[in-house]
Length: 310
Image: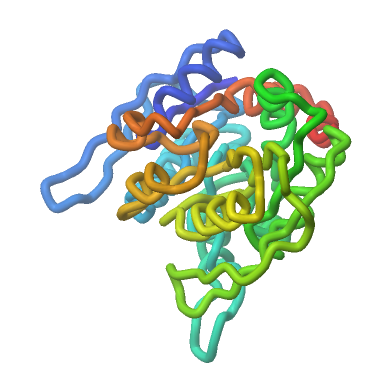
């Protein structure tokens, strides 16, 4: 088995390498003057089972193109099987037509990844489950809930917890974690007037005097999350924290979080945090490396991946 690290998240790749006790394959990734990406694999991969670790986050197009080129280099180097390990799958929010003459870009990106040479996909917390069907090869979608539950058990009193979904679309994700910890849920009913802006309307359930934990898959501008935290505090929540799978933190997200009612925001290392985000005292990062390492081991040894969901 070979592990190849793209340039998106070297710290996570190294953690996975250390857990599996398999060194990262040496490769040369550089940019030409006009921005073109170039990849050269510096070790023999003929007949190998190769795993590429590469999130397609900011800058999304550059990271995606790099992933495709690494796949092509491996395919031309006669790798036996190529698995694209994509902790954060960019373009996942473009998973359906939102109006006339609009693209379904998540499907386009899935086709590109498979055409470039991927035999299998391993990802974490897809924005919507149907994206698995966009790939014409096996695609395993891991969930962050085991990592979240473990961290919550270490840091919170389970007797006073209640879990909250910041919108109706995240109810199933929130309920899954709440059931693991025998807790109730509340729902923040939100109406989005335009892209990038949200207006909180109502809270379904009673968060009064509870330690409330918001659960979501992506935090981009943090508007939805901070609005939800503010209204939960206004409805009497004792504290409000959040657990997020993918922290993008674009624009003024860091300042918005710092000024919000959130007591803490916990995010995985599926994406590399900016220096500004790392300095935000309200944001704490936890590692998904053990989860991904176990999934990679199971795929390579033809063992069950779905067992990791339990």
